[in-house]
Image (cartoon, chains in turn purple, yellow):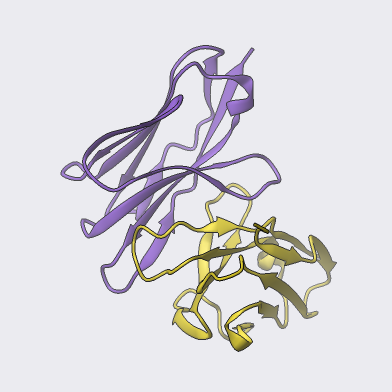
Length: 112
Length: 116
């Protein structure tokens, strides 16, 4: 079982729709969760972080965390073609030493 | 505030040759990370420094990869000898502390390595 799992996609949504990206993780000791956006040929950039159960909203982005289910998601409202990128889920854990594990990413295409 | 700097941006070498990458983190950031990102995969941590000490190098192929962070600022990652499977983007990141799980990592532009 991979430590951080994401559906590789591609996920295709029409412009203006809600894009829903999902991530599951295996380490119950994980404490912090991050969503990075990576455009093709570019480096990852942080868009959201979440540390406690529930929802966290920032503009068009909402991160949702459920530690009991070991599940974290990212919702993008009013999707724009400029949101087309790969979205990486990253999980920080202090179990066995502090470390960050990245998922393989989900490719998102927003059709104009 | 200047971001994480990396050089070179691109490198093409033949297998069995050696190569070195350089990274300068954001000023004041104690922790520096080197990641390897193979096409279609997420970044994989190779080594993590806090100041000039190694925190984690469990996934660094030590028979061919080495890294150092002298004086706790910039860092060099070396591969010697390179193999075809080392073709990837090498990302450097830094964070302010690195010792807390909420610390945010900031990535440099990466070095794209092609091994022929």
